[in-house]
Image 1 (tube, rainbow, N blue to C red):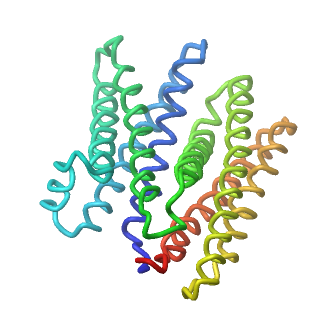
Image 2 (cartoon, rainbow, N blue to C red):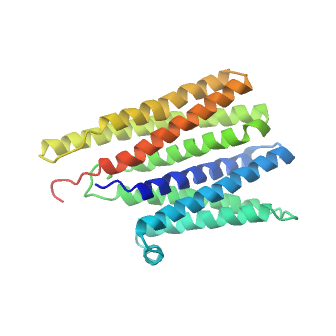
Length: 282
């Protein structure tokens, strides 16, 4: 199948934005520490970047469709997962934009965080619906599994979480920083498990198709790159950052981890289309 670079870029940008917003919402709910001026400024930066990433994600998605009227027609078909992906993604972008604008207002309403929480929920809906879109495609066996939902959703959480840490590290208290790093480390472990299981499934599926005379691609180099560079290296560096008290070293570990996960996710999105081989009955 042709690699849809525009759609792949849309998924990465939206995944990053959704991941960061989910972590920000989680911090707002769980943290008992009152945000001082520097912390509040960091959170506004997170929100602003999330808005930009969400807009880029929507723009690339519409660009993939070619015309805005196709996007509107897609959204109006409520029986399709594609429609719900568009609704949730658009809702996420709108809600986080409203949250950002209200945050800039002179008088801040006590209910403003409700928009953040709703944006996080819409983001989760977008992740689930966009992956269900592929999980129900029986014609392409490598996609036809709920494993794609877990692999992509945890990847978005990991990617967004690392960017969140990199951007807020300087203004976050040591105790909260340690707790967030530990939580993201756990997400990374779960991501490793879900991706490894999914890659094994894809490998077995392609082997089965090859035995039936179907021409299949060589997918294992991409799988190895995704798991080794995109996940195992970040897991190792996150583990080291939990033990190292040096802020300089921690910054390096987190930044390198983020770069590695980006490499892994770009690889994953490209491989998503490369392994899209139809079964012999289709």
